[in-house]
Image 1 (cartoon, rainbow, N blue to C red):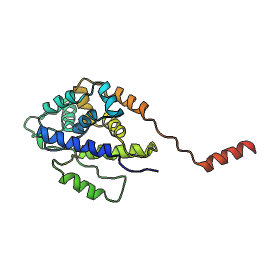
Image 2 (tube, rainbow, N blue to C red):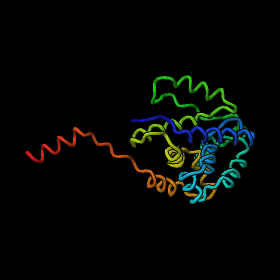
Image 3 (cartoon, rainbow, N blue to C red):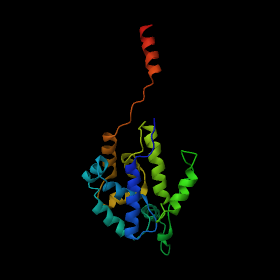
Image 4 (cartoon, rainbow, N blue to C red):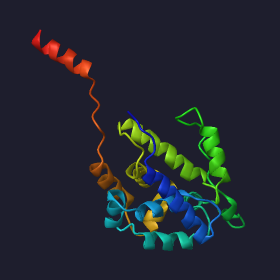
Amino acid sequence: MFHGTHPDVIRAYGEASRLARTLGHPRVGSEHLLCALAGAPGPTGDLLRAGGLTPGRLAAVLDGLDGVSAAVVADVVQATALGWESAGVDLRGLSPSAPRHRILPLGWRRAQARAEAACPPIGGDAQAASEAALRLALAQWHRHLELHHLAEVLLAWDRGARLVAARAGVDPAGRVAALREAAPPRRRVRRHLVRQAAALVTS
């Protein structure tokens, strides 16, 4: 049975908000979450730091973004490679949109309103990371949404977090593999299915 979000995840979001305020960034993005996870005590933080994702290195990369969302920077890098020129565009005012479809139909509008009302607001990429991490926790039959789910989501597919990790000199794929090995999916076995299988074998 799923028991909800682990308190460590809530603390990580609080630390990400504190970091964004300290750096003077207008929104809390997935890059701030990654930095918060890298500084968190426990196995997830240990795995990230062991691979070179230390809070100091990540904070230096974030400081160099000058308040621009890492997801927006990643999009601009990709668009520039395709020949698009970003001259004259105010990147600081851009932010990824919040997810439009939520896995939990009840309460998501209030949660999104709270994210927008936070100081600074929680960006759409950070909201989407939380949503994807919840899906991952449920798919793996884990009892809580935990830090390792959030870290895996950030490093496996979030474009902003992956860009920050790469600029810190770390290959995200290696850390994703370590996270998956440390927290494999739980096996969910229904007793009645076991009994049915045993009956088939003995019949």
